Amino acid sequence: MFFLERKQVAIYIAAGAIITAFVLFRYLPLRQRIKVVEQTKNAQKLAISRASMEKVQMLTFEDQLLNLQRTVGNYEANIPAQRDLGVFLQQIDDLMSKHNLREQVVAPGKEIEAKKLNCIPVSVQCKGKLAQIFEFYKLVQKLDRLVRIEQIRLVNDSDFSGDVGMQTELIIYYRPQAEQG
Image (cartoon, rainbow, N blue to C red; front, side):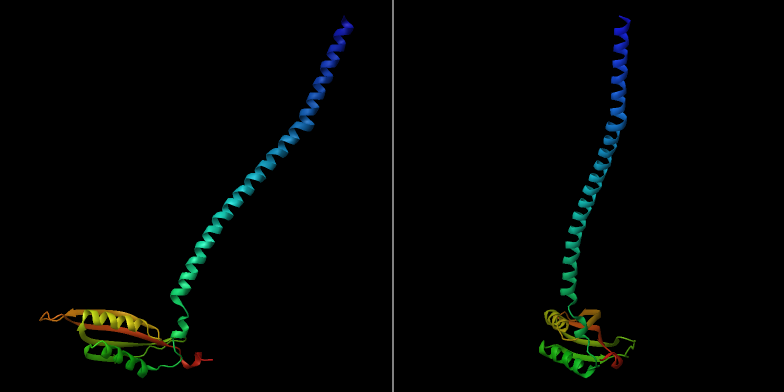
C-alpha cells in the first residue's frame, strides 16, 4: 500500500509539474501575446477611426477651399498694372448717369503707395432714389477692377421727396510699374 501511495504521489507531482510547465511556458506567454495583439488591434481601430474623421474634415476643408477660390477668383486679374484712374472715373460717372443719379461728384484722393499694391481713394457723391443707388453699387462691384467700398453714407432729403443723398469712399488698386513682368 505504501508503494501504491508513492506511485500516486509521483503521479500527482508529475501532473503538477506538467501543469506548472504548461502554465509557465505555454499559457502565460500565449496570454501575453494575445494582450499585445489586442492592444495592436485596438490601436489600429483607433487609427482607422481617426483617419475616417480626418477624411471627413479634409472633404470639408476641400469644399471650403473651393468656395473660397470661387469667391476670390483670380483677384490679381482685377488689379491692373497701371493706374487707369481716368478710365475708372469715367466708368463711375457713366454708371451714375445710367441710373439717372444727379448732383454727381467724383473726386480722387491722395494716392497711397506700397511695394506690391498701390491704392487710390475716390470720393463719390450723388442724389437719387434708393433703388437707383443700390443698382449703382451692384454694378460697381461687377467692374473689371477691384474696388473696395470703404464707407457709405445715405441721407434722406429734408423735404422727404424720396431722394437720398449718397456719399461713399471707394478704394481702387493697381500694381506699381516694378511689379509688371
